[in-house]
Image 1 (cartoon, chains in turn green, cyan):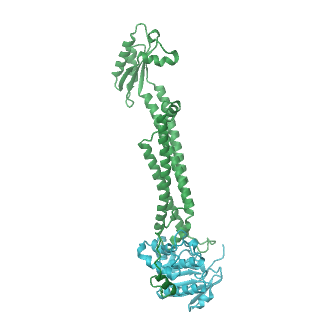
Image 2: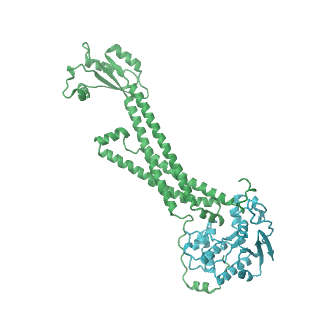
Image 3: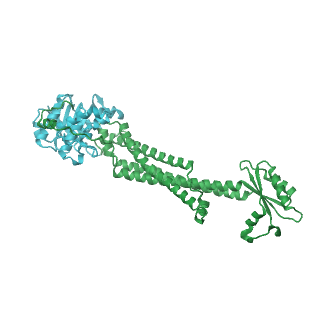
Length: 335
Length: 207
């Protein structure tokens, strides 16, 4: 309106006064309000829980995999003593025989001292192995991916050293594999549940926060803003909120693992730490952990932004469908 | 099924025309203005705006048509977190204009409606009359082809009402069609203009 009349006392008076300064233009969507802060808090909490669950499940899966691989990486040849048997020679023969098979990597004879230490909990200290008919062991490391022919090895051993017995730990491995798979499955199930809860919470919290801004959508719409413009203003606003909340939650979860890892490192070899390590593994964030947290933050940001866009577009659609006689629905076309 | 708010209305708003829309409370003045503004769809009947039948206009074209219409809502519809200046500049901002390109125009219009000293004030601090003037300034800022004003002088004193009326007349002289919904007989008596009287859903026009 550059052509408005100017000749009035007020405008003349104002012309003599210094020009008022306009404050820097505020964003169209208010930066901070109660619903926005509540949404940020909800997102931070859900991001923290999701990242924590992701880290915990990764740890449990890694621990289960390590149980499985450790026990399936070795086989044991047990040789029972016999009057006609030269035990030391038999141990060497057994090791050498095992190493001739494809799939074996290394063989270690458990010496007398180590055998005595193994029996110490039952027979006490100062044990003289030579006085007792104690079986001796050869531990053979194998390639997990292509293990040796156990049947052939067993037959060869029986032929060369009749008192030798091959334990391939199959029973334990099978049980541990089953347990590890169950543990990983339960962990994945919990992860899916927590992520589902996170998705639903973020969607509904975003919609709740947006419902308090409907009047802004209406005004923008009525002053001629295109739907895409209105949606992008809200998208930007909710992207900022979600990034702040999810980064805070992700950082808190990272901090938790760092502190827990630090505590575990400091209290190594104590009963509490050993117990925790045996049960849950090492509290360490590998690359997967950090990537998982970053992915969680990204998912929340995308989810919040898309929800904001979808909700604003739907609100505008609803505004456009309002009719002059709301009580008269008989002639409404299908929308 | 409830009664129809408006029925059997046939009229046009010629370009560059000036008219008052009046009638008792509840007669449907606001509904008629909203229909003209394309913020309500008629349950039946035909409305043509800028030579187009509104039921055939795709939704994504409505904002472009609304940009040719200025509206002053009875309840102002100002955004409480934006200053008077920002509220008045909002239509230009949503059109993607640079702030530097419209700042002088907005400040000049604000001075004209008597809000030159209130440019950085938020609406909750403004009086009813000041809010009304800010809402009027927002409707005028982009020189619409048609201005629809719902009780634009309802909250201001008679001198300010006269001043606002002269602003509407000036706008009309510059080519904008003006429709002012009002109960204010003294306001209507100041101008020889077409009167559209709504009563019981019907419209009588006195040229």
